[in-house]
Image (cartoon, rainbow, N blue to C red; front, side, top):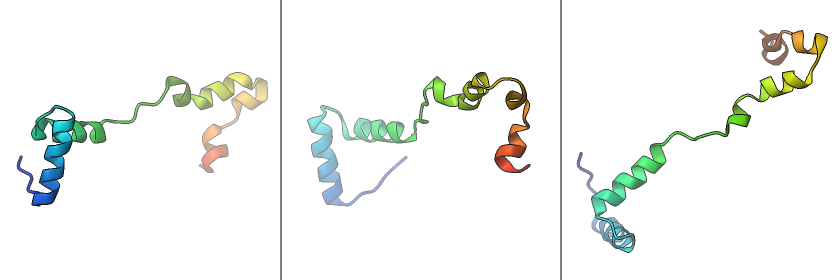
Length: 72
């Protein structure tokens, strides 16, 4: 893939890559990989509903969650 940038941006990218002791192409690849990496969520936040159901007992744990939360 080729990317065309103006001279000033290229100069700044070269300077920043040199500061990190990388080639410009490696510097750009690292930035792109970082930006495109999916956000990792802690496991505890993925199952908040299950954690809440663990606190509820009896009738509260048996409610139709989709209907209550989304009106479906």
